[in-house]
Image 1 (cartoon, rainbow over the protein chains, first blue to last red):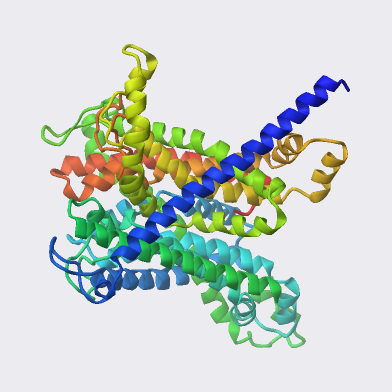
Image 2: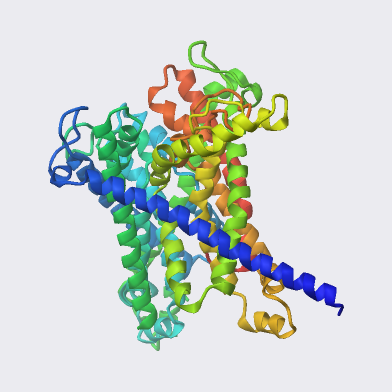
Length: 281
Length: 323
């Protein structure tokens, strides 16, 4: 091999390595800059009022209490709906019909739904629950969020059930237990932490969603726990307040964004820890 | 493995069915119903978009896709502006983001010092989960002023009249527009694509990499000619997933694209995407045709993203990757 060719390969290699170092540095700096301004601006607006007062008119003091409560209510209801449907659907894919033609169609569509634009889910729920009943409602918001969470839970449920060793199933069958009993009493139990991980990831996904709530839950300036009416929620409040011209509203928007991002990060970290524990045991 | 097969092996022909058999059937039915719900949901999305958008589609016909008129006063709507805006921003975001995401993934799998590997990898994965509204706010309040001051103004004053650069940079230097929106989108899909690519590269068997090094290949050659081709179809799938995200993203774009429905004339001109148009106007739609036009826009977005995501999933499945 000629010396010139060797030199060219070396130069190419050094250039490649330098490129990787530089872009990784750039990427980390950009992402750190985003987190940094989130922390600085968010903590600047964070105080006790955020948690005990409702969203104010511009110029008067207030907080985000109604939005926080609304967000929690909608997310919890959405998670309940999504867990029931997602775990059952994932179980069907893993234990009953996953190998059939219909099963592979369902799996494919689930994967597509997993990354479908959330604003389209919002439009769908608007047509389904808002337009026919002539009113935005927190309930419609929950359904939209549930639709986003279901594919995540279905996917993880199928994956963790397939990871359970077949000796568990065989032992159950040998004892004369019906398959449905084995699934509920043995497989779900041994896959518990995996199911929990999936639920946490789904929760992290929906707690930051804004687009599907814009025209389902809408917003509500006052404190309310009635999901039959428009319900305040953090992400829509952040959206409207950030685009407003008032400094105090923008401060609230930053504080809200910090709350949401913090929640998502915390939940994701917990999910990862749970998954690690599972791998170890 | 089914419940009915079990009692057949019993010694007595008249043995009663086990207690759980009936419950078992109900349970299987429930599971089946849940799986079918998924199909119904997707079908429902298509049906609702077609039905809701029909008044606009039937009124404007195929011209809806090609007209750039968007005028709530005269009730004339054409989707060309938002469609072009969506495609341009997503494509630009992908072009900007792909080399960087690749670089990060290669760095993490080949170059990174061992003690930093896990922390940086974890950080990238965590950042992939940050809600997009945070990226949007940062774009509006932090990025846009800096972009206007340090990039837009110098470029616009450096551009010679009549040159290509001048055509590309006309607009109001306020930090919002097509290019800033694409950059924010690129930053948003970066952690996601980097994390996915990294995961794929980690599936390459150590023996494959090691034998390439053993033959005397440089790091660049190992990555570009051995490990990357090894995960080729998975990598294409991952990139398409990133593209799907960029196409359908709402919040990161709405803040900074400027929201005008006209055809974008330059990189700094304000524009709109399908998602940002829907987000901005849906609750304030002035007439039934306006609402229908927005839903028809949603249908267009659905068709675009569905085909991109479909291809992405098929490529990933070919790789046998679980992502």
